[in-house]
Length: 225
Image 1 (cartoon, rainbow, N blue to C red):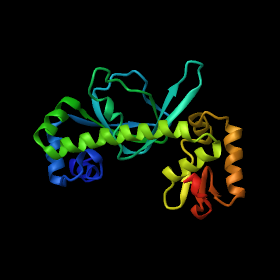
Image 2 (image 1 turned 90 degrees about the vertical axis):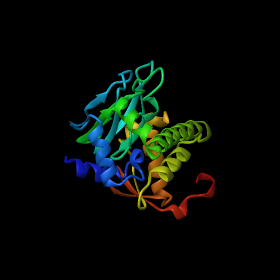
Image 3 (image 1 turned 30 degrees about the vertical axis):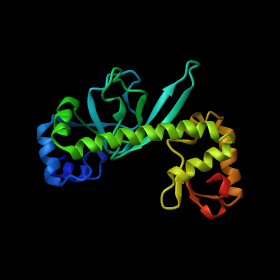
Image 4 (image 1 turned 120 degrees about the horizontal axis):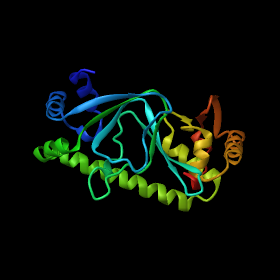
């Protein structure tokens, strides 16, 4: 990928918000960056790997997975193109990857040296503010997920909250899969599938394709939103 094309893409990434294409190109010339390709279902990082680079998904998607002591796995969340990975773990005493990172599809990731990145954010207040905003948003998202697990006690409430947070253009796709989402909700796959079927009977969901549904928000009850 040419620097100009990459710079155009990065205008939509949180770390470079407010910078022009030319300014981003200048930043890229000052840091050692590289783009790596990964195949679908490939493990990019394992939990505990040292985090030495700033990492941005520029094509495809991935999800974080964590293994419990009993061997079960929990899906932490899905990350799409344009997202910065593990930004809150870049600096500090324990700068290690917090989860296993697995690709959902053929993907490309951008890597650049965090020390050189530190140099450029020192020289531009906008970049510094963008980084602070990025890690603050990630912290707020983590807090929201913790609150989600404590307050949404029924499977239906968890599904409805997931739909509200992740639907796009009146459509929801349960990612990376129903089984993985069941692990995230800490319920069985049959129980989750049964509740999704019940939402279809209530005309809240209408199946449109494999693992994807149309959402009728008018049938959401106020207490579930």
